Structures are given as structure tokens and as C-alpha cells.
Length: 356
Image (cartoon, rainbow, N blue to C red; front, side, top):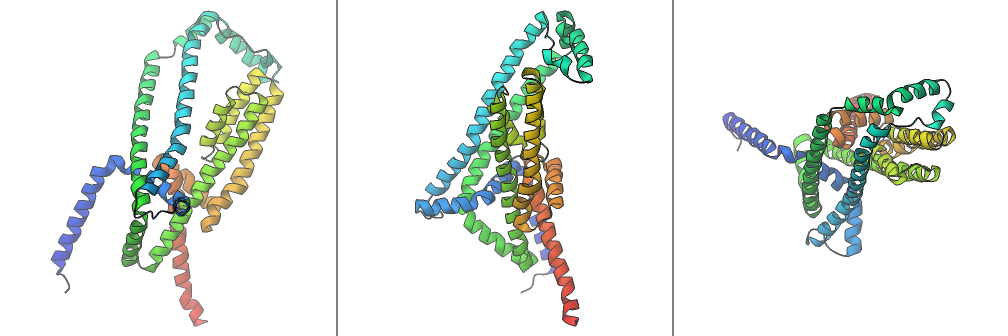
């Protein structure tokens, strides 16, 4: 029996109100839910293989999802903890070194005068502003120590907030592993009911886009970090392992890795001279060129036949709109739009083909 229009309208209004209230209540936890969904979609093939190797039924026990969630958390928590400890040590070193600069100044590096054209000018500025203790103290004194303290406090609050998001991400990830098969089945049934069979095909493209993006960003970034880490250590960059880790993290963002190996080149320039710095820049440029122009387009765009231009626009636009999670949401949305476009074009051409 068909419901009267007033009843349908009331049902839609109540549904919209409940959805709005639910989003309002869960708003602070949306980032954790989104991250958990990205991790679950990206790692589901590995999780399924883990379940088969462990000889357990994932939907009948909590052991498999709990163990795999622990593994995923370990993979992300250990590097994060190590990076936080290393950054804390570097910040402590800088804090202890600043008073020394106030008292003795910062000597001009010997290699600076050998740099063509700009070297002598920079050396004179350095001598006038950093080598002289009084000038260095005056220059550093212009820094607002209150701003630095506020920045450190803000950083502490951000770390606490990110830690909370990470905890709820892992908690949500456990439930997605445990109930993922039923959830996917329910979403498929709902999508087919709402938008028809093409909804399932678009959903498959979005899943492939998430997995391809994770492979293209995370794995390629880790590869860049490992290769550049060896380069940092072999060329003698101080704290080469830390530089390699930072390269791996920023290597996930297009054009992010050059910032780190550029800083490493400047450090090498001050410690070892011009030739090692140029060698590091050359190695970094080659690694980034191969990763961004050959490996990453194949891993991301090849999974869903998405042109690399749209992959790049999705990554950068998603990063701008949604922050770090936008790195994965952007290409996913682009893949859905391209899939819909292809569906519409194919449907529009059918009458023409039939007429021919």
C-alpha cells in the first residue's frame, strides 16, 4: 500500500533530522571514521590473506580483527613515536644552542666565500648579523619568546588531539575488520536500491581508487624515503635516518620530498662543501622524477584508468579541502566522477549505435 504524500514528507523530514543530529554528535569523530575507512579499504586484501593464513573465520571471532588492528597500529605508532622522540631531541639541542649563539656568535662557514656570485654577499651579511655576538643577540632577541612558547603549547595540544584521533581510528578499524563483510553487503543493497546497478560499479571504482592511491602515495613515499635515506647516510648528512623518515612522510605529497632533500643539501653544503650537496640534489631529483612520472601514475591511475592529471588535481585539491585525509579522498572522488561520466557517455551512445 502506497503511503500518502504527507506521510512520505514527514518520514523524509524525520530522517533528515536524525541524520543531521547524528552528524552533529559524531562531528569530532568524523576524521577518525574516515581514516579507519581508508585503512580498512586499503588493507582489506592483506587482512583477508591474514585470516586465511590464520585459519579463522573473521566474522565468528574477534581474534583476527583484533590481531590485525594491532599490527596496523604497530606499523603506524612505532615510526610516529620514534619521529616524535627524535624531534624532541633536536628541539632540545636547538634550545640549548641558542644561548651559546647569544654569547659567542655563529662563525661564518669557510665554504661560503667559495660559492659563486652570492657567496661573498651572504658571507658579509653573516659576519655582520650572526658572527658578531652582539649582533646575533640583537637579531635573536627580535624573536618573540612568547610566540615560541605559544607555538610549543599549540604543538602539544595538536599532538594530544592527533593521539586521540589515532586511538579512535584503531578502535573503528577493529569494528570495520570484524563487521566489514556485512557492512559491504548492506551498502551494496542500499546503493542498488537508491541509484541502480551503476551504483555498485561506481563503488567498485572508488574502492580501487583508494587502494591505488594508498599504494601510489604511501608505498612510493616509503620507497623514496628508503632510497634517499641511504643517500643521506652515504653522503654524510647529519641525522640521515631522520631525514629519510621525513622524506618518506612528505614524499607521499607530490613535490614534498624536494623540500627535505633540499634542506639536506644545504646542511651538506655547510658541512662538506658544494660537490656532495650537488650529488644529493641530483639523486633526489632523479628519484622524485621516476616516482612522480612513472611509478605513481601507474599505481594510482592504472587501477581505475584515471588520467594522471585528474589524479594530481584530486590529490592537491583534496589536500587543500580536507587536509591530510584529502590525499586519499580527492582521487577517490575523481574516480567516482570519471566512472559516472563514462556511464553517462556509454548510455548516451547506445541509441546512436542501435540506430546504425
